[in-house]
Image 1: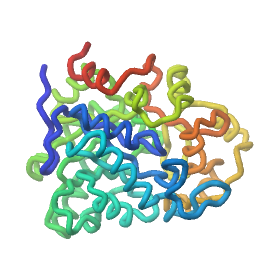
Image 2: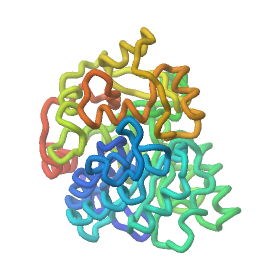
Image 3: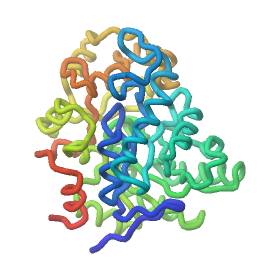
Image 4: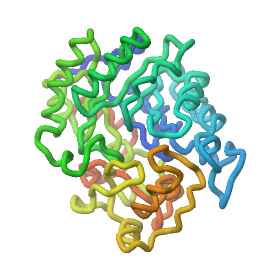
Length: 363
């Protein structure tokens, strides 16, 4: 089957493949810019932009880490990433992924709009007030991430009542995605929460609100998976982990190697300071954390509100901002390496162009 283009608001994505936003520093200018250039939708992660270009955009560092949300989510760093991605993709649609759970969410959304982003994707909580922060930018398309038809209904109802607008598309994420899940441990394993069983109900709910395109995410790996999602009514797919296996991915070579070496049983759910389980690769860090011997938790960056300034980090045994930034910098001892369930299938590093061709043509 051939795939039709995907329309999100005023923006047309020629190839209906959305590259998942991966922070910290995994999908920045090189990866997102190249995906958009090749006709997919490149997505810049807004997480940890104070680390970009060796932290030159963070105005204040403590222990060589950006201090507080203002520097961790650096306005200048974010703008520089978007500007450099634009040098690669020109005026093709470019998106940003901004987690709802972060401190300074509203400011970071405004930063993205001012820096010229076309589409904003938000998960990690129900972004019921997302349109509030994009006033004055009518062309910026808004795409919430949900894990159920019920969540989509709540968002549509609120947005319609408060802002007289609806999502331009919706990402439906199942429990095989990398990073944080929209489910509890128990819910992740339930048959009714598997992506293939969620798509139809969400497509039906989206249809009740007009023609909201549904983008399926979490465990989508190859052309067969894409065809299965389209047969269920999705109009696009979002893939994160698969794009780590590209030359253009902004991740450190050590991160790519950890993923290539990972076996199926190495990819597991783990507790996270955000309050929901996260999916990643068992490494030296996970073993230290289990023994309660992980690195000291200082909460320098104050990254996500559910963590309560490090209180939840102390409960689970690690600071997520520090450990993700260690992975970005290639630290194999203390880095936290997120991966979707299928990450073990990654065998080689190829170009973004080659990957998108494989996904579209099945070769």
